[in-house]
Length: 499
Image 1 (tube, rainbow, N blue to C red):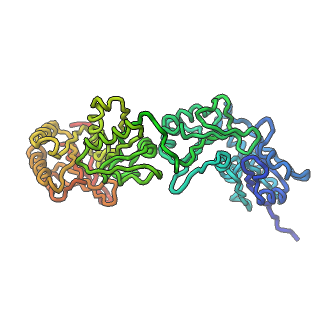
Image 2 (image 1 turned 135 degrees about the vertical axis):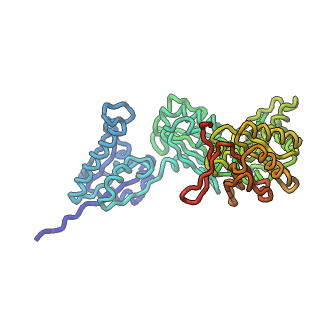
Image 3 (image 1 turned 180 degrees about the vertical axis):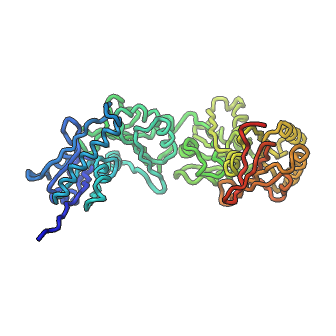
């Protein structure tokens, strides 16, 4: 009579950051229950994982040392570095599978947590679908670093970002600028790049350093003071919580004019979000300021009416002159009919000549509307504001005629408001003198917002009464096409070839 064959059980055992006292009871029990104890090692044969669990490994345990064929050096493998590692993982998984098929229980040891940047995960992906598997979590290096620093990692609504230091510098900078708290893993030879990225993101002064947390040779400190030549792989950079942090005392602050895009948070660039997070004070038109969520407690906000741009700019520059980092919040792109000009105009006055001013771009309303409609700005175009509050109507009229005469696509900003009702009709009638009645017109309202509406009409059917201050108009050239797609949506696009 035959007996059904029973396969063994696989454990992925998290050992914590290095101190055997931080192993969990579950981890110790899993090792005790195992027939086979497996662990990864470098080519020198030593294994940090084994050293952590050493007191729990018995003489009757079968030990499987899974020795990497390489770490960071080059290889002549036809698949390159990744190909060599993939072959290694396949061979290692096959060795473990042989034990499991023989009915043995296998515990794969992993520093930290098995599924957090760990070697075990490569075994898990190859074996867990075939064998009974339990993963035992461990204390991560992130938690260990925060504990050793004795500082909160994140609080309340703060976002924690975990970043491998092996990313390109620009990517590191963007991610560090756009988050509240962060831990950068895998330093070692990446340390100089990480340090530059922290400096570019305006976060170097906040950064802490932790090396070999809960292991022999542990070191902590201020990251900016660490010698790059002394940094091992087992170290992390930490940006702890900034809640309750007092703004630093500065002799001079700065003003950063930030474009939020057409509708707030989803449209912010990482650089812009970083500037907002790093600011002591946010200043802006109340409607645009309300688009920016609370980024950190203690940040001061000053909202004002949209008709006091010069006063707002002067207020921001005065704050910066007293040592504050000020973000002037602007909708769309701050350099397109927005706050950048107002701030720079005041900043050029003698009393503000030594106040640093930066302008950060944002997604413009025209580009957002064009993307929602297709690609009507695919060729040359002009951008004109229909507001005659700061320039006379005859100038607007002359520019409309010039743009229409040059056969440019025209983006019309500020088309109408409660106090300005005639401009759209006047602009439409003028353009009908120079453009075909069937010229496509994109009517885009609240792009990116909850009431987004994007329609493609014709110049002759444009109804001025349906246009308000939250609407942007894109008037096509003679080449612009409007095409109804199979899904019923009409898209507009302007060919890059002319004629």
